[in-house]
Length: 66
Image: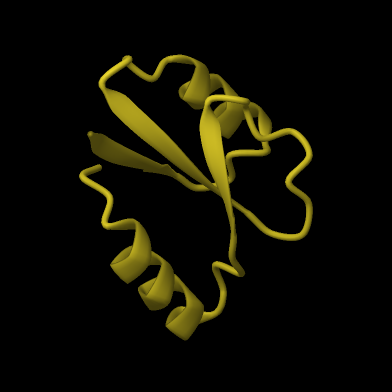
């Protein structure tokens, strides 16, 4: 299954993007401190996007297709 990485998935735009995921895609959504607001069909991934090393670690673990 392909993975779509959605940054800011607990925000307005990220949540709505999660709702449009096709059935053959898995959503992985970044969030900073709170997982509240991440869509149910999206796996939350807490990460500080200002931390370069944390972002590279996330990309290696998630391996998003888009």
